[in-house]
Length: 403
Image (tube, rainbow, N blue to C red; front, side):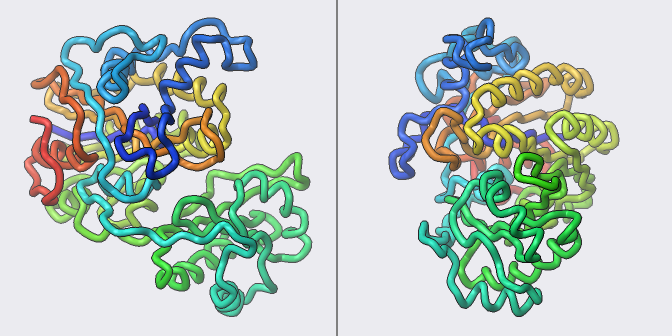
């Protein structure tokens, strides 16, 4: 008896009841991708046929979309197979960011407001930058504004390499991001600067300081690497990861889960460069996961490579590539295991801007004893409550189990 939570980062299915508050009314990540594929608008108009994710559809993705939006997107018309449990969930947390979504999935909704930097130039308080430069012995910084990471690195990367000044920027999320070249600035040096920044942004209630290393010798060659590291504040309450670890259960985390939870209760972490490598690490983690254990995985490419960059074609291909590997996972499940595939927010590649979108998420569950609709869940914490019940762990106090 084991439990797995697999988060397809940003794979929202639209229809959040409070989306208008966030300027996201009408956003629908999966729905709009599927519609574009069916209309031949993906892959520069060269694509033939609808979005092809038969294994996710078999698990109930089309049914989940129908729960959320009252309709099934093109290519997702087939109903779930026998034994699949499916539904959707709205987020109760106040943010539409990665930590809020993941913490709520793990049983702890975020009921407070994060701090955010204003959309001004400069975006950061002068005292913050002054203290950071002093603490990290920096000659200054570049950027100091809201920006796309890839765009600001292309713009300022060469200047950064000449001056030794890191590129600091933010987004609509509660983040302070620091980009630096792995060779000329140094990866360890970048991590040290981020560690110096973490306590300085605490009074501003900033959720994450993110190290954004990159390589290359010119703007056309610059690319961010897999050595990203998030320095997050810890969850405000005990999550199911904490509860499992305290009960001496085996815990395996895949990808950036350990960073999201500030390395608290995340057990043995396995990383990989990209979704395909992460899927391989997921299979490795499942192979070693002991009875009564919990595996928590994040697949980040959907969000960082395709959602934020508004790359509809790439997002469609990533969904199909993820889907192709799902039989490798289902074939390794035991009858008494519980698998939940879900998401933490949306990032509709057809939407304006480059930020996350406030959407409901799919909840696709596989367990030998249950199947059918689990309906529209009033909070991601229902996932954590279900996992806790399955593993016979104490509850976090939030959410209601599906069964």
